[in-house]
Image 1 (cartoon, one colour):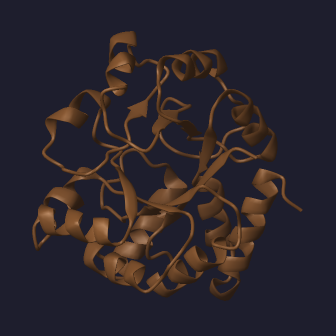
Image 2 (image 1 turned 180 degrees about the vertical axis):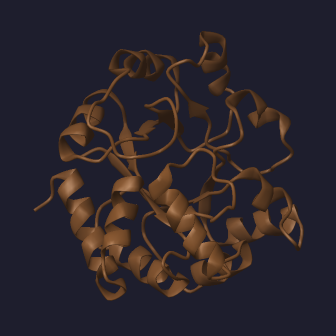
Length: 240
């Protein structure tokens, strides 16, 4: 088994359930979890994750409350924070205090969907930022990735927003990117089946799954969410 990173929206349907899901996932041998910070304008996310963000915001979930929840847990997998730029730079107590807190919590990196690859080195955020690569990323920009301090590279395998899909296009480009970069390459957007996971593992270092897990959360009774998310991850990675 290669890498597997799960996206879990913080505060959907509430932060207590998020805490239980994060702890339940610790029983699996996954690489990490992206904890998604709810945002009012999640332009990179499809309808499934947008709904989760909307519910969390209505419940009053904030970055500060997410940090408080993360302080209460201890997990063996790697933690990442996925947030749009605004909640980071406009953190009420200051961006630097937020970054210091993330370091204390052991968060390995920031994933910022509205921060283009070309701008990663221009923002004043002293924290590892995961760079995004898409099928239309230019070769000269790919070469620049090897100068960025990051835990991995996030390959966006679709044009458009997040969401479950059937096919896996751009396999040849993924292979090309893999040859050009030194960092581990993880592929996300549209991964929802074990067969897709297996195909990605053949050409990259890991997969990232979001919408397929969030959909399970939306379809489940609250008390069943942790066990159903774990079961879905097992299905995706081919674990009995």
